[in-house]
Amino acid sequence: MSVAFFETKPRVFNPLATSGLTKEALEGANAALKALVTWRNEIADTNQKNGERVLDQMALAAKTLGWPAQIVDAARTQLKSVSELQVKTMDQMMDAWEEQLKLPNPMTASPSAMLSKLTSLPGLAASPVAAGNPVEVWMKLAEQWQRNWVDMFDATGKRQ
Image (cartoon, rainbow, N blue to C red; front, side, top):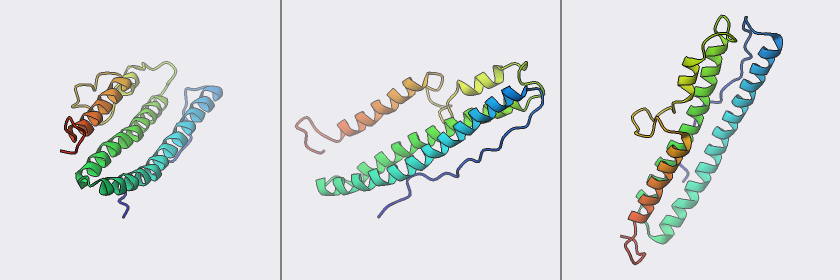
């Protein structure tokens, strides 16, 4: 039986009509935001479809191998966290762009607030790697995942 892996509402693109921008700049900004919305929605759809499929296969394999359900539960938790982080990061980026573009004169406004939002990762404020770069965050998550799998087996390769 499949358990919903990842659900999120699609984000709708609403073209901005802001003053203080040239027609060319506004068209470019709207094109960038539309591309981000499309990509974000495709990521969410792919995560949901593939997450459910992969976890169903993992559950079957774990059962066949005699592994406890906690193995798949741990995988589900980690994969769902990564999926949510992807979508939240995209949302945060679009929100920062939209806020900046809605300022009275976005071309001359200070980008410091926008940069602050773009350099922090959502959902990781309490993490020691929150101030780090995304590659470092990904490596820490992969390291944790690997450690969990290794911890399940003793030195002979048998399940503990």
